[in-house]
Length: 152
Image (cartoon, rainbow, N blue to C red; front, side, top):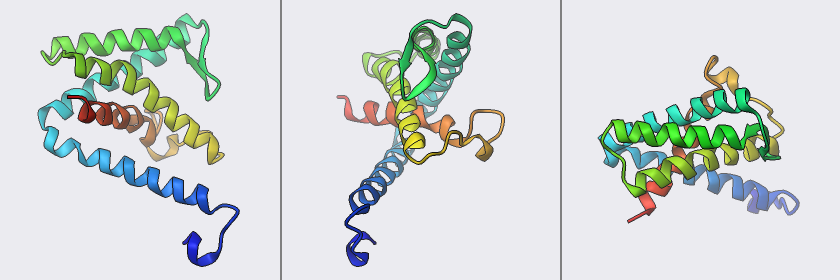
């Protein structure tokens, strides 16, 4: 604990990391009351994430952010379109779900990239090999779910 150990140099960083972890877990708990909509959100965000990866690699173009140099605007836009089409196909396309998938997904992915870079961990794929890692499966979902829970 930073307060008891007198960790003045890294205490604030450790406190912020702990609070971020609590927010992530609290957001994940929001899946339970969301029921079927939570599953739909997971599917749409996953489709968007996979499409963004494939389209970004294939199409290239301007980089989305220095936080994740492999991500491109082309992939982000293609992923958002695929996510919205998935929501429409599942009859769950509302402005709230659209914002959650199209904005929350990519921003969650960038947030996870920022956290990994800050922790000097380039990749977490060994936790769940073959799909980009455990964090990569839920990073987009967590922020998309938080946005969905906060919108009216």
